Image 1 (cartoon, rainbow, N blue to C red):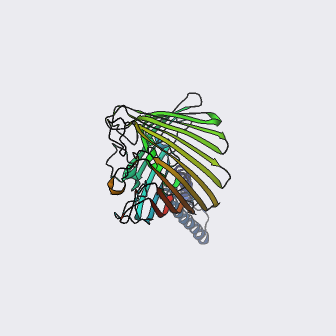
Image 2 (image 1 turned 60 degrees about the horizontal axis):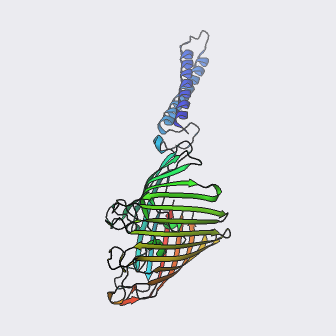
Image 3 (image 1 turned 180 degrees about the vertical axis):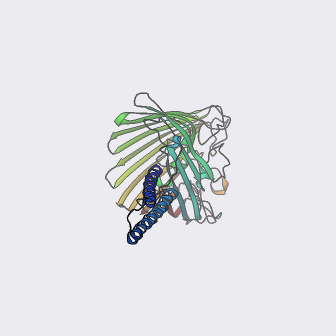
Length: 438
């Protein structure tokens, strides 16, 4: 019940009390011309009853004004009032914890080779605690904002250059302002730090079909950007987005060049979505000429209400790199490094509470510049292909709680995976994950 309503009720009761008091006083002061003792005693009794009722009403009014509730007995209503600039503010987030085990049992006891977030070979990991505050744009307010505060081990993986140290378990994953210009159907702008447009998977685990991330998500594309994007709808066909950013995972640019990024979303059929994404620009420190470029293709198809498919293809190239390293500029005529990969996904909702998902992936790090792994004896290896098969079972325990159990098999055409007493060309892991999202 609004406090104004409670105040109005209180004033009405006070006015009634004043009227009752006046009537009682008038009766008490009016001389009785003809009254015997019985009538006088009866009148006094009635006055006492009115006084008792008056005291009770005064106590009720005081209780109503103190607790902020109405005389109808409704429960108190929180009186938190947001500033006018935060009207329509939305809050969301999640907490993600997991436990994993590698059957390779590497000697270092901690590292699972080639993984993105699930790098612990054995043990528990507090992956993430994320809090999102967002104020979407509206027809009456063509401005908005979003901030993603991220805590946990995962923050160390996608941490941006210039946003703190690489060992920080906190990251301002996103912080941007949105604006809509009244051009055509509306030209939307996003300015600040935001997640990449590329890839079939995302940083937030609840939005993915599997617990572990693909090679392509971890090594083929960036995680975040700092810059500006502009998006325009294409009606039923989809939308187009383009922008200028500092580069890959960089708050502060490491050179004078900027990178161009873009995305084209197409919906040729009701249940089919196609994305064509790309980025190009110089990404190495103090190097403004040698560009790194990636073309990223994503297709999703909702075959039935329960069955969905997804496919992702990446092709990347960076000029003038030495094989086996991602930073050294070569002078020996090496033209550049290439990498590519394909990932196929399927998800089936067995019941509203249980789903099964799978992923098959091939990733060709032809010149070993994305993973930069070493072979037997510590030697540099090139032209290596990676394969992985992932099977995930997911249960919806409650409306906001997910549990996952996952098995993953990795294979390579060289001995690159750490294992007990050396290296192996394969590794197997199992993991269990619990997520609370809101």
